[in-house]
Length: 499
Ligand code: NAP
Image 1 (tube, helix red, strand yellow):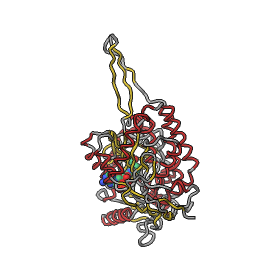
Image 2 (spheres, rainbow, N blue to C red):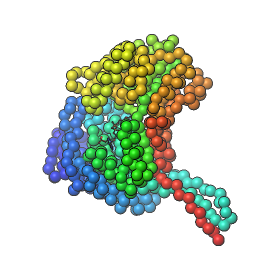
Image 3 (cartoon, rainbow, N blue to C red):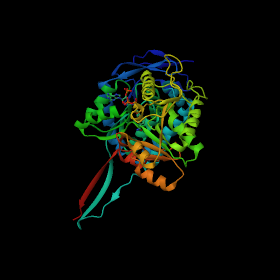
């Protein structure tokens, strides 16, 4: 049965999403506790990348709707900031439970709009929910410092206060977790939120917003705005009442937002692009390095800021590794993400496929060798074969630009010094992967690699307790852990004369 959706004008339109709870899909934007604000400007078609079909149309808002949302967040802020940590925690816990109860619907919505294999979508929903649980606990333990007074007749203390209204801007590759990683921390800290999801994947964030409303968050505390990013995010940047902007997306847009927020001097949290090196030494556990490298490269169909894009393998093991890695890549099942057996889904849009094609063509023109894959599954489709390029020269585009697709570039290296230099030769600094059994080498390399995160002998490293983020042009600040919540606070120093 197709679920009907109520548009801003009150009419129903067919929505080609089949879920158990149709109310998860019954919306436009969410402002001041209400769906479909009067300020709706038009509509946005959401498509299924697996077949290009239109899933639904969502009512959009622009500058006026954004102002309404900021007004609502400003009105809600004093009471929310004054709530006891226990009350904020209770609401986050209720949201966490509701996400768990609706896990299957949320995963299905995500696969339909984003394309990722349903098993990965379920994993992302669990990951998204884990931030609610973690920050519910963390709300109760925001650290404050005590200061030894400099004066005999004064007390000195340092407290943390919520920064105020925060703007959250999220990408399409993790449409649930990138929202909750920010929102849970901001809400726990006592901030109110105005958020913009990617126009490619608004349904997941909207479904989560519906569940937040059911959990009992007061009106105006969480506002979700679908529409033109230039208008919505532009307004968030220029409004002086918005005191922090937390952005996850490309480095290119991150730079623009840093400029746009300069005039209003906001706290900026930037989770930007990555171009992860993956280094395999000849003493590494060979089978483990191959399976983990396949996972690190091809998760989320390669559309992952943590994707291992540049594989450097020590020469003595290079030929064997390339063969085994390519066999692992070629064995991945490319299919509609709704198929339980799918490992690789469609890419998000035509531009994403074209970027893969251009990186492969450029690398081959510069002397790289195609080991497997290298083309779309069929003309016009968004499915791209898992692709392995070997002997990729340092000047190939793929060695300096994020591909954001299922294309792996491999090159041999000889010495530790050489591979450290090559791994660090990037404007990005999000994550680096290292495979070796030599502990002193692990110690040396983890210090030498200029990355915010280093994964040793494994691919999966994320979770709510870790400070996620990068160095250089991969971003500013960290998300997750206590640091992710402190980012949404201001330190206040108070000196009280005691007579
Ligand atoms: P993107 O194009 O930069 O878009 C990200 C967000 O910015 C979306 O909500 C988008 O809204 C909005 N946006 C786009 N143009 C804008 C503009 N001119 N002004 C204001 N906002 C604008 O990134 P993406 O393609 O969605 O995501 C892929 C990128 O995200 C990759 O570079 C990846 O590495 C990075 N990423 C980083 C992390 C991390 O934690 N470091 C995690 C995931 C992804 P619309 O969609 O509505 O245009």
